[in-house]
Image (tube, rainbow, N blue to C red; front, top):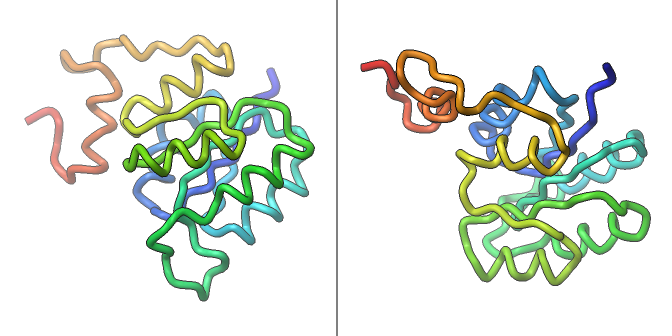
Length: 152
């Protein structure tokens, strides 16, 4: 089975790491930490099935992290050729709305449930309700954010 490719445009390593660990067995994961990387990965991978877009991402590796949304123009750029699902990812509701207006057709504020939502959008069955030590797997994966052991 060929894994569908997803492109995640997000500058925070813990978020990228969480998503990659959560999804690596089901999808081919493409990580872009800057707008420049996102453009390059998108150009080299015309078979991307889904894009996750954060609102505030540096232009390149030397640029500081922006404090205002700068990816709506990238969403519009990608939408010229990409017709698949695109998820607006931001903790700020207004930024989500800006990404939705630019062309995203899904939104996610809750990053913990984002892997499950990605797999639902792609139509991939995933055992998120599987119990490990009495907890749903998404709670076990959430410790990457909190830095605590979920078993304790």
